[in-house]
Image (cartoon, rainbow, N blue to C red; front, top):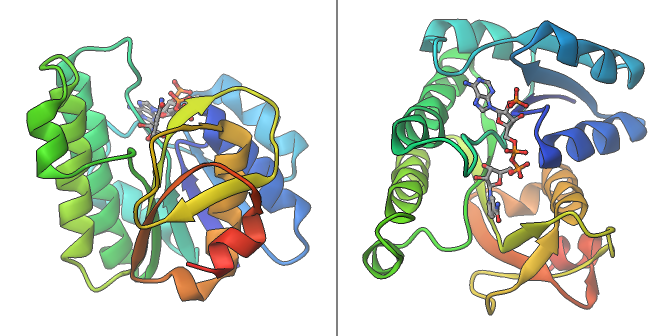
Length: 217
Ligand code: NAP
């Protein structure tokens, strides 16, 4: 299986590509936006494709997705940019990649969403945070409306703590944090378990091994 990792140079993305390359049967194609980001992925033996998600149209992304079997979207504009970039990346780029998956015939699509993307959450978060939740909300809505084999992963607050390999995952779990490396393990386990198709789940640090938690969903 070949997986297009969108946002591969991100903190979750880098862990995910490394974990994919460690498997014997899955290979990663890292979608990144800068030439200087290439060597990290070459060292891992991963293919790369240079794409600026803001400028790229659906055709360009579909071309990058051709020949892959699955897409993981883990890009994000980050907290340091304005609401304009939130709309352009967290919403519009996410939707473009979903449409590109359809166009390229890549059925499997895994979305890294945020913890709570419900309408209630949009109404209750501070107004400065609302555009991000709005963007994630509508990207999820768009994906659910497709006939793609999707999974939507809703991680809790991301940390750079060392991986524990243990999580709590279910449709609804209490708020909590999770190391980015554990999110990457959850994404890999999601790719490896087709039982997650058509499901979405929240995930935070916990007591269950990643594999067991994902298989139990
Ligand atoms: P991150 O480190 O900020 O990585 C985001 C990636 O998106 C970066 O590699 C960045 O590229 C890429 N990107 C941004 N704009 C781009 C563009 N125009 N073209 C191409 N690539 C672009 O994010 P993370 O911490 O790994 O988080 C991964 C995901 O989890 C995000 O979707 C985030 O919204 C979501 N999430 C976050 C939290 C949290 O607590 N922070 C909680 C739940 C979910 P560069 O490397 O080139 O900058």
